[in-house]
Image (cartoon, rainbow, N blue to C red; front, side, top):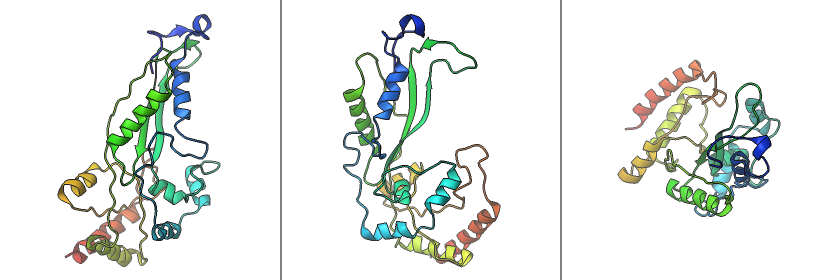
Amino acid sequence: MYGPDKDLHSGLFGGTIHNPAQALIELIAGMHDKNGKVMLPGFYDKVRKLTKKEHEEFKRLPESNKELIAMTGVPALWGEPQFLPSERTGARPTLEINGLLSGFTGQGSKTVLPAWAMAKISCRLVPDQTPEETFKQMKAYLKKNAPKTIKWELINLHNAGAAITDSNSAGVQALAKALKTVWGKQPYFRREGGSIGSVVLLQKYVGADSILTGFGLPDDNVHSPNERLHLPTWYKGIEALTHFFYNFK
């Protein structure tokens, strides 16, 4: 968002020049309703509805609200109340604010009315959404809601579509058997977000499904300080992959 051509003294110009940081914050606030539903026009038009069987699979996942709260340090969970937390993180698309920057953010105070404000925003998409359509939906939202007192620019930095693999495929079943051999328990199937563009490309252009598993734990602080890997789980993962290659003939 762009306002004046330079930072201004807020005492001299505040109240008559629209603060781009304020305009940006108000636009961002309008991107969700109070229950966490994304308000971009047409955002949910192509989202696949969960089947009863899929809903039952999500209910089987061994994670509780209490565990999620303890793991993340939040006072309470948030999001569309008609969906399970596991469904909100795996089967429902999201819009997240990854970062904000504007004005003076150093130590001490300097009463400026900033010349610009920016936000980095990401959307986790689900089948059958596309990054191209979502970018157009964001642009349509800004065109409709951005005030005429500021200028704005929307840049597409990176995108990768969504993909889903048939859990009954030979490859997935071979891996499930391998995991059960090593851990002694039947594995759970779940959907999860992650930027692995090659999975989408292989499915789209080659017709090949990827077999996805991970050997990290939910509290490994992925993308955060002190990101780590639980080595006993990692070593078991190596053993499981050995069984998988043996099973998948």
